[in-house]
Length: 79
Image (cartoon, rainbow, N blue to C red):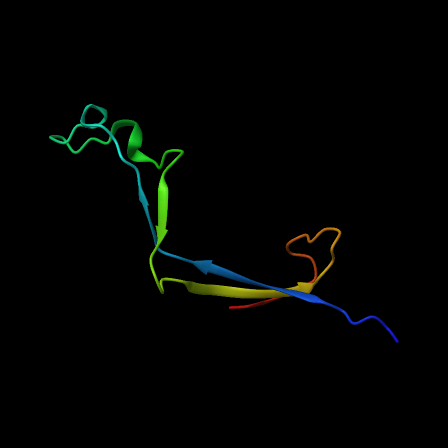
């Protein structure tokens, strides 16, 4: 009996999340709303996903190969 093929389905999503990082008052300038080096998330930022914010952008299906799964090879895309 031939071995059944397996497929991997990927869901490409967007989600809304909030990052929180605690700083001391001397690390930012509240008067000028200047976050200084904290304009981008820092290592150690705590992330919370907003409930029910997931939005599927598109889905892909491709033959499942345990060796390597190169994105873009023999896949079908569904927007």
